[in-house]
Image (cartoon, rainbow, N blue to C red; front, side, top):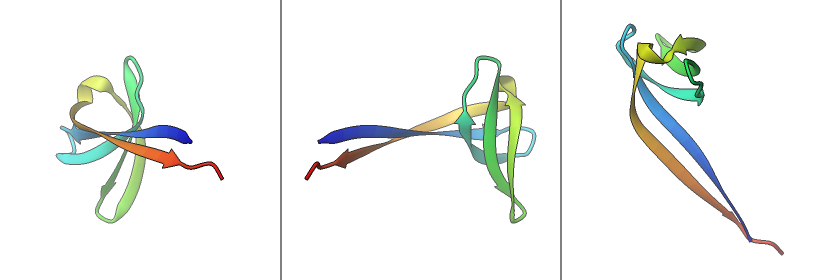
Length: 65
């Protein structure tokens, strides 16, 4: 049996006033994905430009046959 986890970090982008998710969390800057006006964006933001509001962990279990 294989177990692995996916972690989704939900953030609030203060300048845009919207929520997004962190794709890659860095020490000083991170890659953040969000959608605004029907368009999808993937940008690099300094960590002080957003606030982490939640962390969602998905557990995956694969059974071996």
